[in-house]
Length: 267
Image 1 (spheres, rainbow, N blue to C red):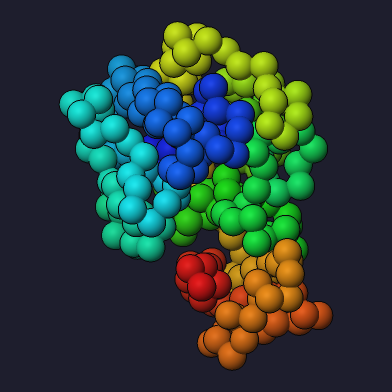
Image 2 (image 1 turned 90 degrees about the vertical axis):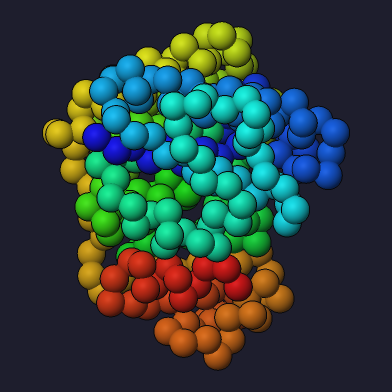
């Protein structure tokens, strides 16, 4: 049984500030250690649950010359995808997984009290998939779903977990590691408690893999993104499959989610 674990930073236990997720600040180095520890906890749980192979994807973009996982501290039982992972998502996604887990995930942009809430970039105010507003949990669920892979566990702050439950239903095991008090303030579990919760949740999730179903996106697929400014929308002008409407709303249409997504991502 092969499991993919995508790890983001804003939903990691103990991370509550924008500066913790940015490699240009000294406080980021401590967040890297917690990021690595949460990833290790998920690997530990997945293997304890019966996974034969675990691949961890460093899914946080902290800077153009930065990797977030501390390589020397990683669990030796896992394999690790590092570097510009979102620029090369086809390569790590097309690897025959039985299930996916999302660790360190955060709530979508505009979520009240969501810890460091956003969707992919601060330039995006709203992301709508076939008219349904969603965040990075939904984007990942759709990417894996295109390959028949279900998301079976999500760890992050409470709003992120609620978002996952609403989207994916009871099949997803949740690991809420912090309770938001404001966008950059939360009541956090201790590192030991958080790691125990993430590990246990990953173990439980593996047991549910055979019952889980991939997230299915209707075809043809439309993605609409409301940008923060008209300037943010300008790079999309004239791109294949994309229209810019009302100045700052970008619409991508494709025969399926992957086509619509690849037309709009990375510009």
